[in-house]
Image (tube, rainbow, N blue to C red):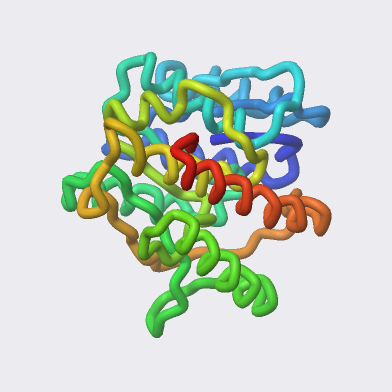
Length: 239
């Protein structure tokens, strides 16, 4: 769980519920150089749940992409066979995180992506303008990856340990915000490429748009540039 200045949005009770579940979850919280009390709150949780919560402190802010990469790498180095990440604001609720883990076991896939699909009977609370902008971006990302993926940017993804994943995490990502796309590009290309039939998307039952996003308008423009760079690198075999 990457964290940068999340003190106002951290739900410690919900995180306790996650690690106390019967699913054997180990929470690795990566503090990405926060300047508020995020680190203190995470360390309190670590003290309350020793062995179930570990705090990894990056003293200098390096961006969400690097926080996720280092967190996943450490989890693999610690012996975890299934790893993943989710947003600290719990826009994907704990119940859904646990359901995705259950789906991972049921589907026996190598990658499981949470997907924000607006369907009857689902509670996907997303601002309309962000929804449609997201659909435009998702289409572009799908074309870039040459994968029929609906939602690359949902902040809940899980991976089984594979040579492709280990290789993909060996070097920093090109983009600070589109690391999701870049990671998928890396694991589906190269000598250890994960085949499409080993990747699943699971529509979420509940997702909410939590205020306080750190994605600025400038970052959105940069994301478009980064997507073009990722597309070029994947085409020349340098993903």
